[in-house]
Length: 297
Ligand code: G1P
Image 1 (cartoon, rainbow, N blue to C red):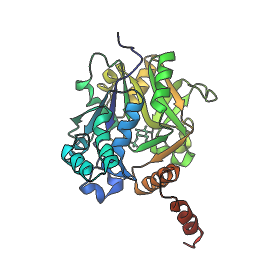
Image 2 (image 1 turned 180 degrees about the vertical axis):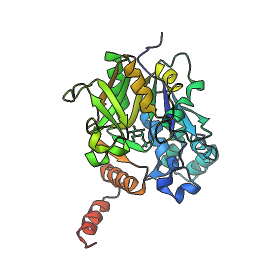
Image 3 (image 1 turned 90 degrees about the horizontal axis):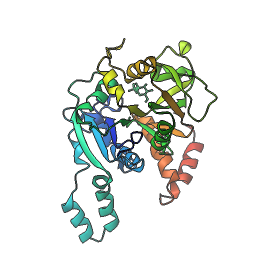
Image 4 (image 1 turned 90 degrees about the vertical axis):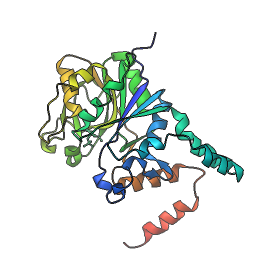
């Protein structure tokens, strides 16, 4: 019998317009923009596969069909690369389709994160007792967050969230946690949560990062969530309802790196971080950066 605490499906909300990245997102889905040479959606798929997932359900919008194409094999290109001795590149081309099975569902109207996640419900199976969600704008390093969250669900059941410490002035951009014991760095229980609060009134400086391990029952709760003040159906509200029902909701605290690659500055930071961490990368980049930083702006 399948382990009810494990998960095999990861839902990736990817229906947004990518307004922070215009004009490139006029014709290219934000999730195909690369961190160096790897599209963000492939980083997500690799993280999901590493955590043991077998299936990625990408929630797309009309016009973003090229997202799924990245996961289709391209034997002609591979043959061409092999024929000119570029075997490593052929392997790179084969990587995305080989990671896990990928399917898409379409969110016709952008009605918020909760609505996007709920769009995946019709394709869940009876074995999906828990479903993971990765927000592709958020790169978390090290990339073992979902594995840590699965261990917490193993111990406590229910839903597991991911918290990081944000500066108070930024809290209005996030869901913010009220944790039962904020000194518990292992898996504090979540007592409450507020979506995009006035920073002065936020219950803590623990913000919600884009990784969720949802108990299947959250999908039922999502059906009852009404649009909030911004007219969106928030995933946070379904989690708050789960807490009100007495369901266990815990958070892991992510203390590693977080890059928001949903805008050009964050993407650039991630690219520099990846380039500097890759031993095979151009060794002159570090020197160049050092020299550039010493120049007047
Ligand atoms: C979403 C969630 C928010 C979370 C954030 C993390 O907000 O609603 O709770 O803190 O992702 O990136 P969004 O960035 O979609 O506005």
